[in-house]
Length: 157
Image 1 (tube, helix red, strand yellow):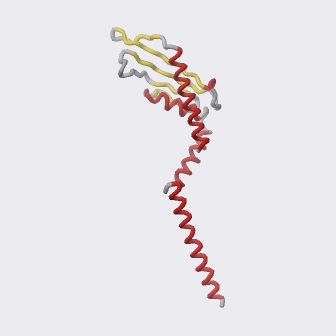
Image 2: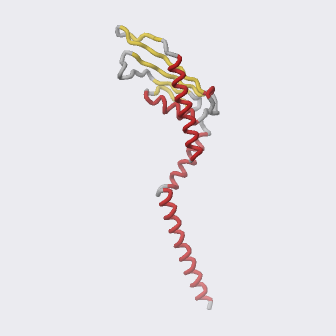
Image 3: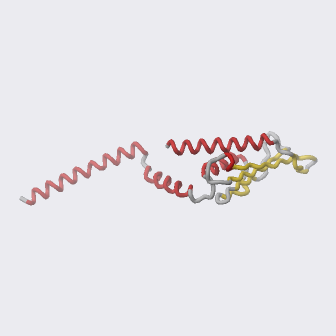
């Protein structure tokens, strides 16, 4: 009498556990096959956000915005990004160098400072030239807008 009961219980358990595969398959279809690795990556990314010394959204936005030029320095703990000299192919006799400094862990307009240097090629020599204040302000606005977009995207999803 005990054997049929144990056999019945084992059979019921096997059937119940087989149903778990359907659940796993449904999760994989919904989230994609590698959802577990993405979850681990997201957890790692979330922990890394707190390890840099500045606001992560401003940092990412500044890197994205200044990606047109090669970087000389990118210090996430100090919040400093310095580009190398960059000459636009449409204006090869002029080059710019940009420094973005993130001053705080909060996403605020006053947590970002951008400075730019400009040089003009005259008789084969690069000579310092003034940078329009509107240029620096425009770069700051682009970085701040991008940072806000990144934060919105992260909170949405």
